[in-house]
Length: 263
Image (tube, rainbow, N blue to C red; front, side, top):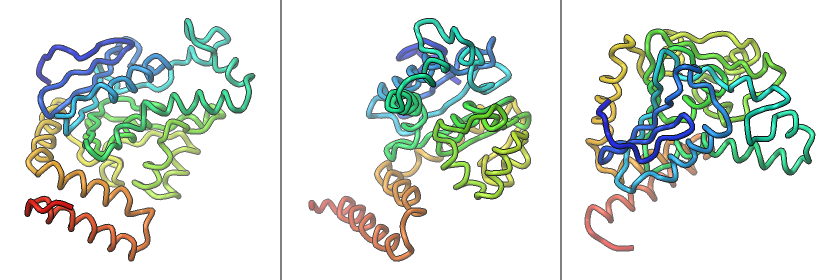
């Protein structure tokens, strides 16, 4: 990736913008890009800081691992400096606990915005929260050394960072349940075969493959991509007839826009 002045660079997250492409980089390879509430707030800020010119967002990570998941310090009585420990959160009210988890989830939601297409470039371990962060993106290009795993259930928890919805959508209920309940690794060949990955390439070709994919996405008119993404994302929640109607309405908007006809 090209070296650019960062929009911001803090708490293990760096955001750079090059015209229509933004790059969000996880920058703590010494800890295998383990995640924390501070990192999640930085990811949320990255989404809020995107200029209107951005059409494609690339998520990548420094080092050999994409993200080893939640920093285990979260499970200690001390937790993170300046943060309530997970033990403290568990002792709070239902409303406070729900609000805190909802805040954490914000770091994983904005990647689905209809005005952008997000691409995760994933190498090495993508465990738990790391797997869910990759799932938060629209598309995934993975290295041939990728190792996805959903380990939350093995720890007595559940995947709660928005990963269950896209996982079921991509691989189906039965395989999603098996992946989560066993905590096993999903490697590159299976990821590509089952739809978890759009493309699997040798690790030294990931950046080039992502650049090519981003360029292909930018070749289509922005408004057509936005309408198409919204149609596809909503398809699973609509009946066949409802989807037909949504297609007609979207196409009418596109035709009027191309013809220069106002509403």
